[in-house]
Length: 408
Image (cartoon, rainbow, N blue to C red; front, side):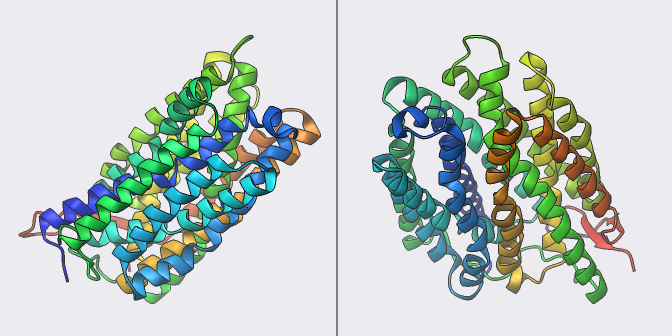
């Protein structure tokens, strides 16, 4: 069935909340990791590796979650996402050994893997102005790390690191119960067809876009996944003497809060200009910023980090629109799942990369030089996407935004 406008708004609301939750626990861990060496008796670099299994599962299981959403039930998978993620976060807060902590974190990765292939596919089916909807949705995912900074910083300072996982875990479970109630009452419905389907692409363009996006999503994911664990430690070391966990957490909050808001603008631009153009410019804009971050300190470091993360996030609406453009609706969840194998699974190896480079060099300079090079590769590869031109949908009774169609 096709959702009514009211049901579509409900879908957007729960999808946005879910996107925030999907991105909040990993950055909470990176801030908590600043105090865990004293709690667990492990070096900082070893503490970071406790989340590797979670990151791999977050990406590797995404295609299966997307396939189940396509073939079984989107709403059913979202119920599993909310309840499972909340319970897993609570388990992280209750863990008493490094092994128990790693296993509980792995469970957050397993249930967290549901959101992107299922929640975003569901959002795209319900949206008419798809770029705008993805942009708004992306803001919630983008501010997840900002919320994480506030939650983790306040919890560590007042209640201890365990509360940083338990309190939001309870909130996620309550949201899951509210979502289940909305499904039962018909406020949220299962949808399998697009309210505003894009024109079908050619077979050649589909294959070409798939190959190019595989490269760009891997590179962009590597940048995002490496920057997220590095920033709290960089801020704690480079913002001046006496800056502790709370100050580093507030800097992380500022960066991801402001950067996350850029996705509304980026989604608006991707609706009105070729998504390829927005994608290429966002990728290339990161390269000089990441390079300068390698040696920056103090407030310039925070400013550069904000701009670099904003550029990385600005590419996301365009990237999702390109996937939507070149993927049939019945396979969209599976395709989005494959995206997150690359951007969150394979590129999740960025965490051990950060740990290894930090151990070898004692700093982050080499890491950010490599990330700058990766941004250049992403931008260059994105120019190989099928050429696009904005095409107005004339006499559109639904008031739909302009669609982007591939040139023959």
